Structure formats: structure tokens, C-alpha cells
Length: 307
Image (cartoon, rainbow, N blue to C red; front, side, top):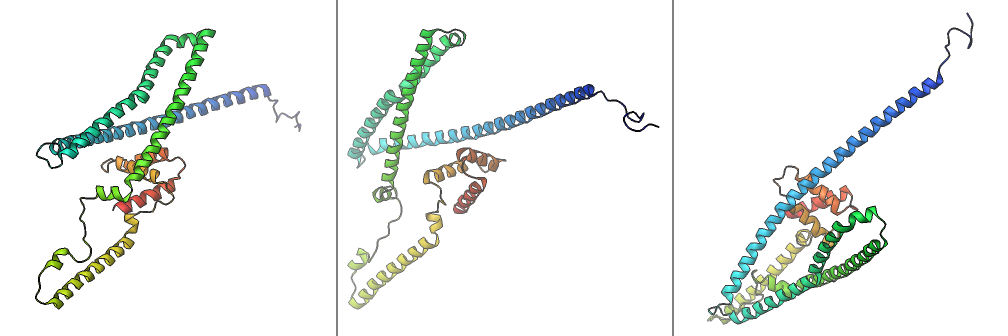
């Protein structure tokens, strides 16, 4: 028996055929990989569309609730204005002044809408009509005059966008100023006028009471002062004990972001089967720079404060 390459044990290989087979295997594997990637992309897109559809359903329900609440509030407000502005009301003159102020604000709001919002919608309609007429020509032909019109329209849209950004920034600043005004002690006293007011010191009625024994009266009045001091001390202790509930720490969150976080949590009802998955998904969209651990930690704090 011969040894080596001349031996009958070894056969001469067709390397071209092997390369062809390897290439076919590689092409087949690439096709399988491409198909798998397409299936994964389709699955991911389907999951995304399903989530967005569920978010849209919850948002629509929330909008309906807010719309109903707004209508009820407007009805109650109008009813209150009508009753308070009647001749039988002791604040009728004040309510008439408030009605004039309300009409003035409605007029200013309508003027603002005509000056800012209406032009945007008109421009949108004009652009839609222009594109429907000339979009195909822009793609098919090289019309210099048409392209110049397109460039000028783009400049107009850019200027309008910049103007709207300035208007929105001004509105945000005015909103912030109003929110700061509402946080002042005066507005807090007005808005919380329905709460029980505590009279400090000795009540006037107690001082006016007649008592044959002046020493006994002095002891009773002194007891009022002691009770008042004990009551204040108890309030301070409660403020210290429940400070984390009255003024919960934001944990590095901006106040606006914290408010948005709470709004998202309240938007999804507890009866929803996959409530946590949905609001966590939306929170990731609102706060992409926050990690999941930070969102979960903030969620736990919100639940502990609300419980």
C-alpha cells in the first residue's frame, strides 16, 4: 500500500465545488438570519403598536373624564354666577364686576387665538393645498421657479415656527409666574378659607363672661392659655412626625417632573389588568434619562405617601 498523497486512502478534492457549497450555505444562512431579523422587527413593531393602542385607549378615557369634569365645573360655575349676580344676593355688585372681568378675559382670549392659533391653522391648510398641487411636480421635474417658491415657503414656515416657540416660551413664563403667585400666603388663605380657623389665645366670649370670683375667672382664663400652648406644641409634633407626607422629598426630581410622574400614575386605573406595565412604559417615554431603578424607587415613594 502506498502512503502519502499518492495513496488510495486519499481522494483528490474539488475545491471549487467546496467553495460553491460553502457559498450556498453562507447565502442560505444569511437569508435565514435576515428572515429572523425581519420577524423580530415585525414582532417588536407589533408590540409597539399594541402598547401605543393601549396608551391611546387609556388617554381617551382620561380625556373623557376630564371633559366631563370640566363641563360639570363650568355648569357649577355658571350656576354660582347666576345665583350670586341676582338681586337677592348680597354680593351682586361684586359678581357683576366679576362678570365684566370674565367677559374681558374672554375677549382677550379670542384676540390671542386669532393672533396666534388661527394663523397656524390657516397656514397648515394653505400648505396642504399647495403640496397636493405641486408635490408630484417637485419630485418629477426640475422647475427652478417652483423650487424657489418651495424655498420661500420653507423660510416662512421656519419663521412662523420660531415665532411660535417665542410665544410658547412667554406663555410658560407667565404660567410659572401665576403658579408662584398662587403659592403666596394670601392666595393660600383665600383658597383654604373653607377650612376651620383656630382662634389663638383667650376667646373674647370667655373674657366677657361674668364671674363673682375674680380669682376663679383668672384661673379659667389662664387654663385657656395653657390649652392653647399645648395645642400648638401638638401641632408642631405632628408636623415633624408627618413631614414626609405633608412635604414629601422630591429625591432629586424637579417639581414639574414629579407632578408629571404622579399624573401618569393616576391616569391608569387600578382595574387595568396590565396597569404597571403600561405606566412604566409611558414613564420610560416621558423620562428616557431615568433608569428603571429610579422610576421604581419614585413609584414606591408615591405609593407610600398616598397610602
